[in-house]
Length: 100
Image 1 (spheres, rainbow, N blue to C red):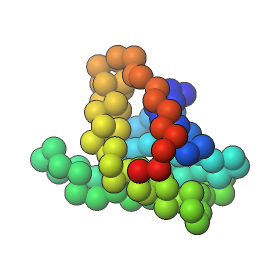
Image 2 (image 1 turned 45 degrees about the vertical axis):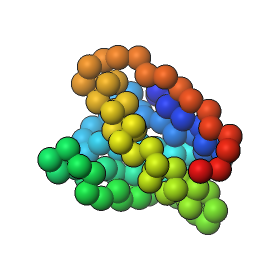
Image 3 (image 1 turned 135 degrees about the vertical axis):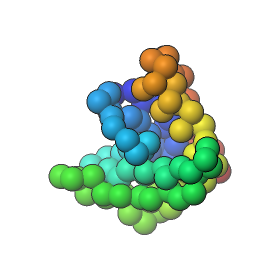
């Protein structure tokens, strides 16, 4: 399970056996949601926040923090997904303590 970011206590990661569409998971305590990136011609057209089966979804302030994070880091997340799953590269973990 490669972790790629921690943002204000939210752990943002991929599972090692991921599948398309490109997506990332976010966990805060017992809560977890995922964000799917819908891409056309190299442009992220939509980001959909979804629930993860068997878990309680992020809500309130932490969900908003995750959404804000995605707005700023979406293209970097997609590149990290491609680097890890397509090119089998190691990816760098980053801890971000300041609000975006």
